Length: 241
Image (spheres, rainbow, N blue to C red):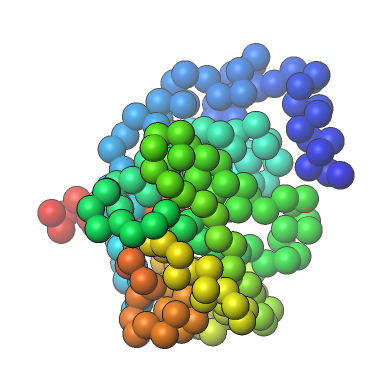
């Protein structure tokens, strides 16, 4: 009901840009350009956690991009999901291309903690993944969301934890329930999240998917995509090229 009310109220109440606060535009052209006009690229956190698949990001997590992600996630500005889904779709395309794809792209969102979803009234990563799958299909790439990852134990709030403590906090926290491996066998798996900071969440997601599918190391396909990554992750990748 909370999500429904936010969507309805957005149609009748004055809106402001989710990136800069400019009135009368849910996302102004300047902020939209920050989100969409960059070239998606491979990003790497430092230190890079063991088992992290190749991650591609659409933009750096700063300025308007940071504001838009927070507006969608924490303030429930659900009208921004289309723009965020378009950005994520661009990162997915950059990481997968078209060579060697068997079946559809299977976008597997990293799950949020249940208490976080309940507090926000929506699951932001899953919403963005669904929008990205739609964007990919409109561009001619078969894609669908396969939300098979589950948290099977409680984890602490990640805010304020450094890279090592985040990895410890998340180690073994995710699983694919019985039967999920059959869904994952129907195409090429791409792990998706809204944001990459330390990479701990994506590394744990890759481990859980690999365990379910009987693969060692990274998840089948070895790819992940995010809307945004920390600016330092962009710099590290640039320096490695």
